[in-house]
Length: 207
Image (cartoon, rainbow, N blue to C red; front, side):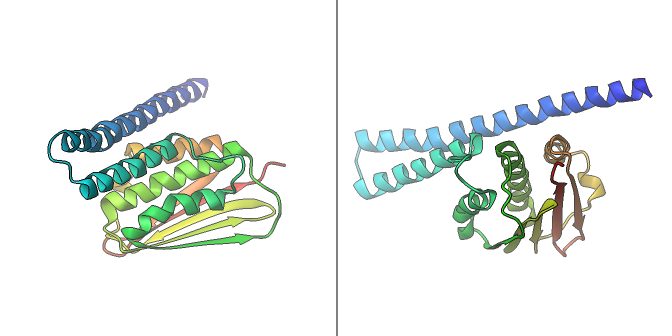
């Protein structure tokens, strides 16, 4: 049993390192491929034949990208914002890609610790980013519940769906698993091909 526990802990550590490196690679790619590329084009345009309207658009796009990357690194006003407000800010720019229904139910005034808010926020990011990349969905429903005994999150899309068993080894799922374990929470995916998917996260409040 001790050998099994040590092996499990070692695997968790390896998965954690892989997830962290994956997130660093993604942020580095966003900086290099998107933000720096747009700024270089803007600089080239400024020194050749300036088109002020086009230049203004590219700079505005660069600012949006910089804000998104900064948001990925650390959500702004984490301490002052509720989890719902953080989610609302995150999904707002995505509304141009698909219709989003974000809802909230509250049966307690008890707030969440900043560490809990951040981990649930990161889990939500991972799920939604995977939907944007792979699901080809047109609608997304997100419901957050903060109750007296638990916090729950449900995300439903109308996309292509996927084989849950085949997705079990992906780094995205490992990321969600590690964050859920750090919160002592639980999650599950349900999906059918061509019939969308649903994600449910559940965490009891600490006594």
